[in-house]
Image (cartoon, rainbow, N blue to C red; front, side, top):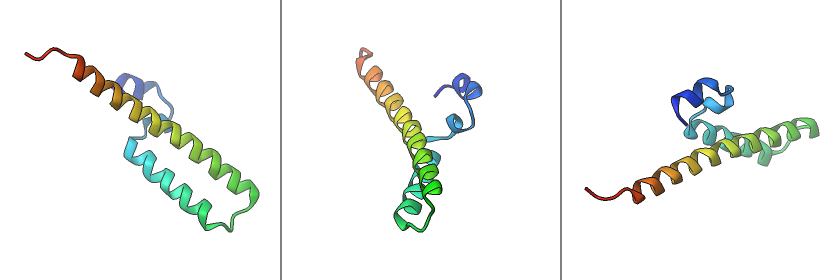
Length: 75
């Protein structure tokens, strides 16, 4: 994500890959532990889905940068 994109993004979009991944891991742990109501489980699932999208965007961006770097002619 560029600085421009971060400035225009919502709070979730400003998360770094590491932050989103850590929160996603926490959500998964809570879901796996059980003991939550159906409503809370659904909210956690939705949060996890949103975090997974953020992580995937970061990974896609990294892949694009690597691919672009590979296409540049060697000096």
